[in-house]
Image 1 (spheres, helix red, strand yellow):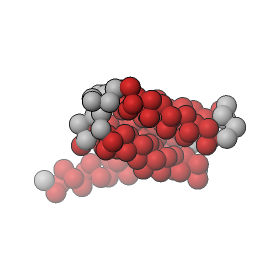
Image 2 (image 1 turned 120 degrees about the vertical axis):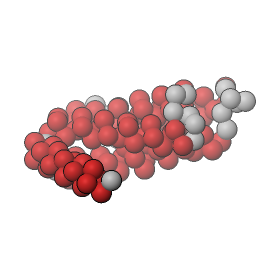
Image 3 (image 1 turned 90 degrees about the vertical axis):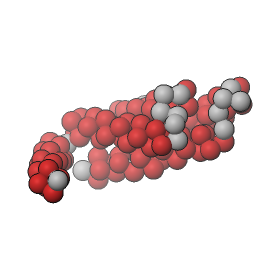
Length: 124
C-alpha cells in the first residue's frame, strides 16, 4: 500500500514539474482538466455531478480558463454574475428538482476548485 502511494506520488510530482515548466497552453488546459475532475468529484458528493446545474459549473470553468488566456471578457465579474443568474434561473424554473444546497454547491465548486487552481497558471 505504501509503495503504491510513494510511486504514484513520485510520478505526480514529476508530471507536475513538467507541466509547470512547460507553462502556457499546456499548463492552462491541464489545470482546466484537473479543475473539471475536481468539480466532478465535489459535485458527486452532493449527487449532482450529471445535472444541469453541474453542467453550468463545468461551462463556467471552461469559459473562465479560456478567458485567462484570450481575455475576451474584459471584466471577469460579468462572468460570475452571469453564472449566478443562470444558476438562479435553473433553480427557479426547475424548482422541485433542485434544492438551495445544490445551487450553493455548484457556486462553491467553481470558486473553490476551478478558480483556486487557476492561480497555478496565473502565478506561472
